Length: 171
Image 1 (tube, one colour):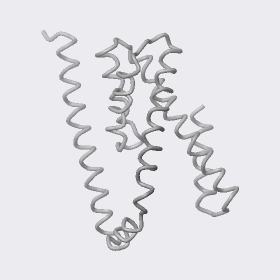
Image 2 (tube, rainbow, N blue to C red; image 1 turned 180 degrees about the vertical axis):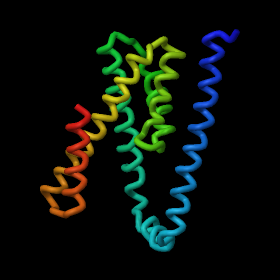
Image 3 (tube, helix red, strand yellow; image 1 turned 60 degrees about the vertical axis):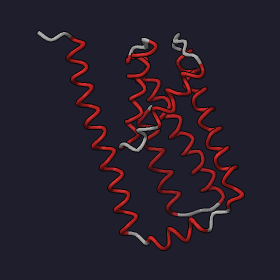
Image 4 (tube, rainbow, N blue to C red; image 1 turned 90 degrees about the horizontal axis):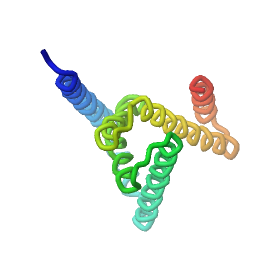
């Protein structure tokens, strides 16, 4: 008779295979989408990127990830889980590796790493991941609201309404 560990490992292997296929499907979808859309127009936009801003962009993106990893560490600290900063940042970045899954659900891979490395139960890690996604949506909605106030457009209004409904429903 199989032990619980063997059953869990078999389930984990199946999940890994499915996540791999989902990720590959998403990548193929976006490649086909880019090829169907105007590739010349996309390449023109890439050529118009000012190289002097690239370092600033990468710096801002890296800084935002560091801040978000501190947010994750603080959320776990509030639950009584102590995770060293360096490992916390690595675990946060590992969750980003599967962010391209629908709804960003691939970030739940972090709960497996947290359970394996720091014995953080999934009933503590999954709510933290939901809270992170909520904060991301809240930040996006706030940015859209500022854009609506600066530049009125029907697209930004519709995005604001949809994200507000999701935020209220998520509470």
